Length: 378
Image 1: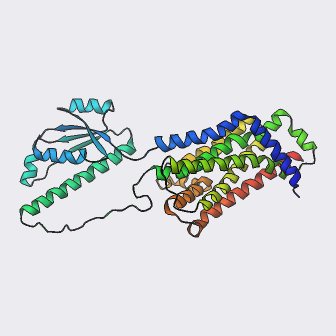
Image 2: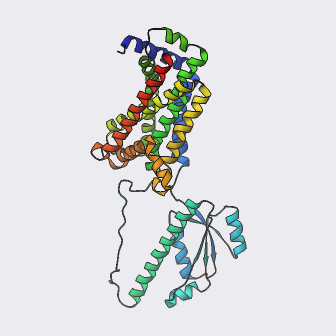
Image 3: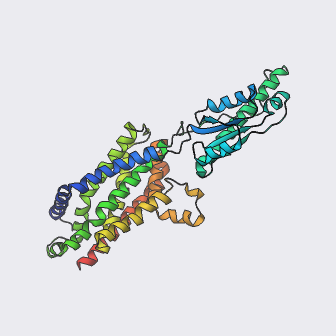
């Protein structure tokens, strides 16, 4: 049976270690802030003000009308005008522009005569994601221009009120403005907790072994579960403080709305944090070396969370083998929960399976950490 007195004594001892090691405590608060700012501002997947190079060989009213659609779009900005391909290639090579438009000399005549014509769109493809988005948006603007010309032609024929065969009315639910921050910030909570768990708990028991104080603990009446739980308590408090900090910064700095239950958010965060802390503690107990345990924790938790959880890269686009591998990454379920709570405002009536698997992960890590320490105390 766990003694509350001994458990509080171990927790108090660990709190004192944390408070005395002010550098680690400062990093435990500063690193989440830095991560939130870096990911929130640097990991911007939105397409805005892409610089465009233009070679308008037509120089007609029609070509200027066509270019005005790009100039008026929030996705593009007309950065430079050219007279030949050589200068366009130079601009693309120097990355002063990302897209180039080449309008043929007969563009105006073809538009006025109702004939088909082509506009060349060149994208700088070294950044495949941005190039793909830019080409998609440029194609959409071309379709809008085609529709505009078709309406003019119908009007010239006296068919002013002729309806279009199909009219699309697009609307995005849950993230109306399609802001990437609204997707990134909920997931950054998982990154913050993984980093804190890997940085702090993965060295707690290993430090005791290296300093020779673990033998003193073994010689006392303190039991294994009391050591494990007592060492986790301070870092759980720090981790939940970082979660509150991430939620506050997401709301006040990045304007990310929280449509769901804040209580459910912190409840799920506490479960995920518990599993992450005990995972780091298990590595610390097993490996006995601070540097080795810290590196193993980063490799076994941070990298899978960043790459295989669906946080940055959609799981559906991964190879089949990695898709199956992602099922054992707990951050996959936690990030899905965070996005559901943040963006959709849904609860456990829909996401109960994710919550159940997350709880199962935390329970398994608690059991494994206790078993590993018990083996060392025998």
